[in-house]
Length: 408
Image 1 (cartoon, rainbow, N blue to C red):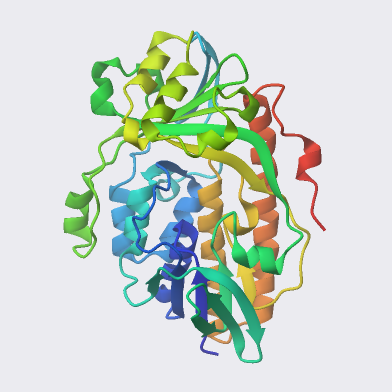
Image 2 (image 1 turned 180 degrees about the vertical axis):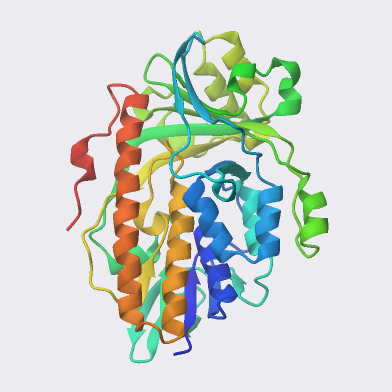
């Protein structure tokens, strides 16, 4: 059969799926609610693990894959996670890698905006911005997507890649629960140029977690591109347009919402400069070296985050509507598996839909096989992120085994 796939959401997972389908000759259209690709800030550094790396290799055309590599952080010989207390006394370390590693499966880090610009390249004719999905209807001919502007789109399959607040999930799985962990974060970045010689050598090529009083945690990691972004694009993919990104340190200041020196409602209305000041105030009494990392930040880059997760859901009846990434298994950021799980979902679903398009599998069994694997791997990642986050945020952390019960 010849499939037409509709994807709701032009995030990393949705765009990776679109490339995987196009690479296989499957017709696809991506619908994004934002009016343009750079409408809002969507985060900074992302750790790409071995499975995520492999998923990109499977889905992307070779030139875009090479551009992803060229704009990623070089993989050090040894990757470690370092842990300190707020006095900058080391409390432990561990291997930051997980999985089977070979030169072709090396973990790395990327700048989220850069990777998204790469993924937006080569999808001309398949992208529809300013199209907010409000619901869908399954018909005898397939599935019909409905948009806020009154328009509709028809296809054989609808894939929800529309994030934790997924409209598709709300309709398909109304019983699915979003867990508000009670943790909030203020995040930002500090350029390496601003730190100069003051960047601590022990934090180089590491993920760093600093546990302070009042259940506050400062998490940090570097992004250092192998090559200047547009220089690499000009050589490898001349049609790509990548914004310049100086090397930087990404940081997140996490705390239970009740311990923030600002009310919850005000947090989301506060300007970036004030948020930066709050993040710095939360480091009062911390070692000067740690304070300096945040003090010298690019203030306009500062924004708040709510740490939430979609709790595991029992198997549902397979149809021509399915989900990937945060739409079905959003997770806490500790562990860095959220984006990687979305990339793996994209590669897995792409392979199954390719098989259905070629007549090697019937459509529903193909989607069922994808969903079985997606649930198993995604739910394990959600539970792991919840359990890892609890200890890192102290005894008052809202995480508990009861919160990872399966929704029926």
